[in-house]
Image 1 (tube, helix red, strand yellow):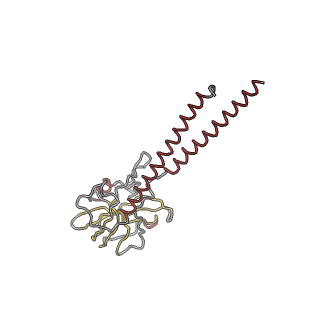
Image 2 (cartoon, one colour):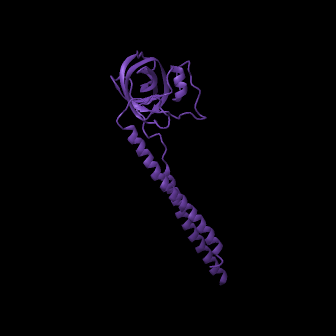
Image 3 (cartoon, one colour):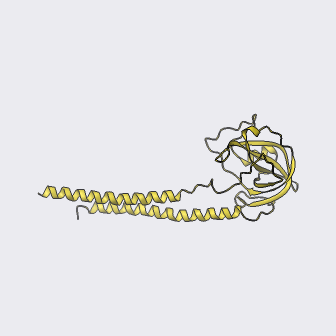
Length: 227
């Protein structure tokens, strides 16, 4: 027993570490699920008027509704969807109550990029959103071809002369049959805590098996050596 004591202490410490990390991921999973449920509730809440000074943190995912006019040029953001394949998000200026904000109208197919879509009066229902879609792999926008690769709200606002406020449309009245709304949801928010906790608990179980196997081998070797 004394011979195995240092190893047993080390093995117990490693096991406690794995289990502690697994327990921490259990807590993080519960927190993330509560957070996602809160966002889902916020997205699906009864829409309100656009705040006078929207806050990117406090008003993120806020359900809003407004009547106004879609006007000016479009910006096309390249996107690939599971249901429709490759296409573009249509971003446009929306004039409402003396303000100009951005609206993500939804998806068009690649072949519909240059189809005319004149200004029109609509009522929008959607959610305020400030996407974080730019990383070191994001290409530079091809502004000559009007092909963008991310919804960067400040850049979009500068290009279209609007506030740095984006509404991602859920419904447009009257609708444009060529544009399919792509409403915001929680699917893009990573939640891998279940995977992580299974990994840590799996490592803990593996460590126990390895420890028992090592002790068994050492016991067998000791018995053979004493003969």
